[in-house]
Amino acid sequence: MKKARIVGTGSYVPEKVLTNHDLEKFLDTSDEWITSRTGIRERHVAAEGENTSDLATEAARRAMDMAGIGAEEIDLILVGTITGDFPWPATACLVQDNLGACNAAAFDISAACSGFVFALDAGVNYIKAGAAQNVLVIGAEILTRVVDWEDRNTCVLFGDGAGAVVLQGQEGESGVLSTHLHSDGSYWELLYQAGFGTRIQPTEQGIKDRIPYLKMQGNEVFKMAVRSLSDVAVEALETNGFVSSDIDMFIPHQANRRILEATAKRLKLKDEQVYINVDRFGNTSGASIPLALDEANRAGKIAEGDLLLFDAFGGGFTWASALVRW
Ligand code: COA
Image 1 (tube, rainbow, N blue to C red):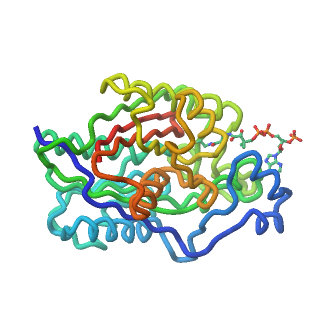
Image 2: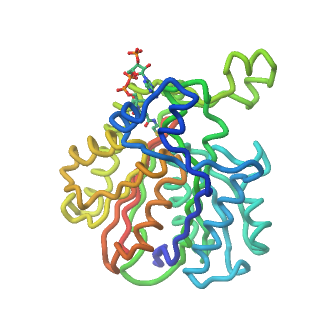
Image 3: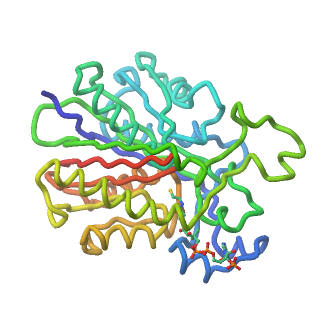
């Protein structure tokens, strides 16, 4: 059976950088508090008029360039996002239009910060089933438009960006070895954005009461994140007969440094095995893993044959892993 191999990576972040010191100017916070609690120093923020589909399209173009693949060769476009341009149509359809990928089906996957790994799983399974040969998998978000900029508990954590991979069906050892996905909807209220879905209608009072914006119970999310990220990583290793020391690069969802360090400790990973860039991008939700992957790949930090483990956790709750032989 063909494996789904990652043959190109790409990423894009908006130009504008918002540092912790910038936040100090309009929020009761400090660089010291944010850095010590989260490891985040700065994040990128989309410019007015710049939309999630724009970020996704640029990341996709870069991944396709690396893969040497034309738009008409793409069979499927999957975008993991919770901050699409519109409730509908899917951001994937807007990306398809931008790219001129006229032969591709396109749809979004909503699994919050696990969105990229959920989308990757779908792409892998289309390829394994013989239903697609070239799949564009993208994680793209503009979280800075849905956070409450009056809530210091949450707004300091997030940033904007996009990452993409081209998956291609190939024979051989390299490719995605396994994916594991989990969801537990009973925790939805610990991390969610209320508006504007069908439950909440836009009203002036609602906006005054800050109802539509992202809500999070940070402490509870923290504990569940560490446990779930560890469990699903162990599940991936055990399924494939590996131990954590076999991993060349662990690329977790970049939620915050303390979550990543606690997870790495539970998994007995050494610092040099763990890729961290949350300090420069904040939590970019579904974009964080492909953004980190592309950064590591372009820096020449990944070699053929390396074993990579992607590990994600997010609202829903959702959590997921993907083990990849490069
Ligand atoms: N600047 C300054 N003070 C802040 C602040 C900020 N940006 N945000 C919160 N505080 C204050 C709180 O108001 C609280 O003050 P109080 O004791 O006077 O009420 C104090 O800091 C401690 O808050 P607490 O929530 O206990 O801090 P914490 O050490 O748990 O850290 C998070 C908060 C959000 C960093 C932490 O809970 C976390 O990382 N959670 C997971 C978040 C996440 O990654 N979510 C996405 C998962 S995909």
